[in-house]
Structures are given as structure tokens and as C-alpha cells.
Length: 353
Ligand code: F0G
Image (cartoon, rainbow, N blue to C red; front, top):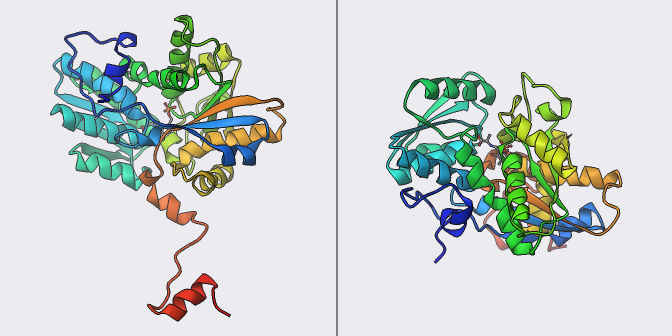
């Protein structure tokens, strides 16, 4: 029986016999071929989606959280704390419950998706909404965790990146080699840092013949890595990546430079267009942040970036059900109210003369 990524990739991870494994059997998510979406983007690409929304709490955060919480447990910590745009808090709250620990999360007031908020609440976390953005919340969490014996479980905790690097292992294990390109959304930049670490370690050990070119995408209103300076008031419909001063800034730059890749940005209009394409063309429902790399691939293709056959993996970092409000607001076919009669239903279907 599959028992989570610490068990699957134990020899690649900083765990010992003494580390208690706190797991919800995360990881081993599907790598889905996306032929219809690929056809809409470029004739040259074989596109695969690494659907991280299939993790236990519905996002890639569970990969890092299993490691971070297992370590916190080994160190005898009883309280976890994080700042979050939503997914980290959902994951931290769930793993804290699993471990019998307390969890405190700081979120930007009014700016996190409903599904994520409800997760943190049902798992019993203390949810504090600050009058400020993610960057300010993370600064406060770092300050408090330096002063009190609380385990900080944001991706500034190296265990988070250690767990998250396993996504690269799984892609290589599934494809038999690294893809030509790996596209993903970039917010606090931990994920692109971790994925590149994973590809690098696997390649160094001879598990893959090649390494991918890393393509990171930010939202235009929250694109510090594209502009080369922090954004004080980040804004985007993709609230998961509404971040102006990423903690893993250097890691993202390294992933870009070492892989010969790029970090670009896409507008909210481009994000919403791609957000609607995924579920309509492929039956895969991912949250708005995941649409950033899809829109980014479309943008690059329009510029002639892909001119010969290549394989592309896009990480769909979180499930679409996390953000029902954006789904309903941007729905192409809104609800149609009809009388409870055969004729009314047929007429609404366009089936009668
Ligand atoms: N996609 C989703 C769905 C996310 O929740 C996040 C980050 C990212 C992409 C960006 O990943 O920060 O490693 O570059 N969410 C964090 C949170 C910030 O608090 O849940 P990153």
C-alpha cells in the first residue's frame, strides 16, 4: 500500500529511524497528458500536467508539510505557525491535527480563497487575519518564531523544500527522463527552488539523462522577480501568488539561470482565460494560480518560443475547488432557472421549435 512520499523517497530525504513520520499519504500525484490543451497552445508541445491538486489537502504544500511537521515533532515542538495565502495554512492545519499539535496561521485579511480558509478552520487552527499582505504576515511569523519555541513551517524552513523537491523525482520516474521544459506558478518562490533542487539531485545521481529548462510565471500585479525589485502592494486574482517579496528569491533566480530558463508574468485577463481552458478542454479543475503557467506557455508559444517537438510539464499546484468564488464569477455558462416542467426544460435545452 502506498504510504506517502517520505516512505517512497526515504533515501533522498533528511530523515532517520528516529524521525516520526507524520503523513497523510501525500505525493505520487497523477502526471496527466493534456493533448487538447497542448493543441490549443502549440503544435510542437507534448504537454503533461502534474496535478498537485490531488494531494490530501488539495495542493503541493503537503509534500513539504509532511517533512516539516515530522521534523517539528522529532524536535518536540507542540505548536506550528505559518503565514499563508491559503494553501500552506490548509496543509499546516491538517498535518498539525494529524500530529496532535496546535497550529496558528496568519493570513492576509479578505484575500484568501474560501475553500482554503474553511480547511484551516475545520482542522482547528487558530486563524488570524491581519490587516496586511502575505509579506507582512511572513515577517511577523519569522519574528515570533525566533522569539518563542514555535516551529515555523513556511518554506523558509528547509524541510519544506526537501519535501517539495520530490515532485521532480516523480516526474522523472514517470517520464523516464526529465521533460524539456517545466512550467510552474511562482509566488514565494519555494516551489521552483525545490523542483530545481530535485531535478539537480536526480540528475547528479544518474537517474535522469537531462535536466529541464525551468519556466516560472508570476501574475503581472505581483511580479517582483520579473521587475527585479519587491512589489509593495501586490494584486492579482490568483490570490495564492499575491506576493511582493518572495522569501526564496535567490533560489528562483538560480533555478532560472542554471537551467537557462526564464521568469515571466501574465495578466489577470490571461490567467482567467487559461483558468477556463483547463477544465473545459481537459476536465481538470485547478485554482487560478495554476493558470499562470498555462497562460505563460500560451504567451511564449505566440512569440515562437516552441519551434520543434518538445515535452512540457506544467505543475497545477492546487485544486480548483479551493476557490469556488472565482469559479462562479468567471463561469462561462451561469445557472439557468427553469420551471419544473418537461416543456420548460426542453426549451431551455434548445430542443424544441
Ligand atoms: N500555487 C499555489 C496554488 C500556491 O498556493 C502557491 C503558494 C504557489 C503556487 C506558489 O508557490 O510560493 O512556492 O512560489 N502558496 C503559498 C501559501 C504562498 O501560503 O499557500 P511558491
